[in-house]
Amino acid sequence: MTPAASTSRQRRPAALLAVTLAAALIGIDAATPASAGGHNSDYTTNCPSAESLVSGTTWHAHRLARGVTLREGRRSDATGYVDMHVLTADVLTPGLSFRPLVRKLAMRSKLSDLARGRSRLVAATNTGYFDFGVGTPLGPVVYKRLPMLGSAAPVPVVGFNTMGRLQAGRLAVTGTVSTATTSRPLAGLNLLAPQTGITAYTTRWGAAPVDLPFRAVSRYVGNGVVTSAAGTFTHAPSTGYLLV
Image (cartoon, rainbow, N blue to C red; front, side, top):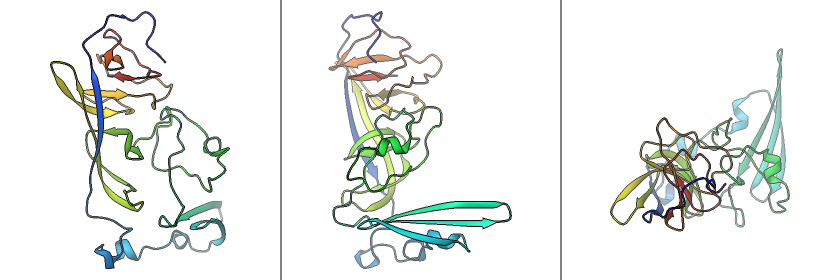
């Protein structure tokens, strides 16, 4: 939503927001073979298959596309049964790509709704953890090298590197909020809980209100200019930023 009509329209000093992404990788890259300088250990080269973890299960395989296989199985015992689904994708398959289906971060949507109408989509699955109330992911989200969600504090991640291979590392979002006279570091971007410091919310956040901490101050920024007085605004704007 845009700032409420009752907010002040007085022009404030220009506030420019710049967000960049930095990732400091740690020494684990399960997609790199030993011959290319990767780690030659049971941890990365001799992992048990998911299907072998539940003995006595009959599995049926379905080839969804080149490099993508779905295996389904059911395990029964005296208390009932459990259905299992194992999706396997070879990330090095030519023409196979991966991307988030999320429309807005703070928006609960059925996976089937997000996948509907995408003729080239062969598989969709939930990844990582998300907040059940708001729906936003709890971990960083980066797409095409641009951060959608993240914190200034580095956190462990597993994702795709610039070569399209899976890689483990630590990721942090860095940025600054600057006026003509001062600059402040960005504490986070589209976080479920605003951090101490300045947290920015973009149009990617969604319609859910931001849970402001006690005594927090929030302002709207559009086209490099603060467009609201200090207040307790809790909704991300349709353009620009909400700074908390």
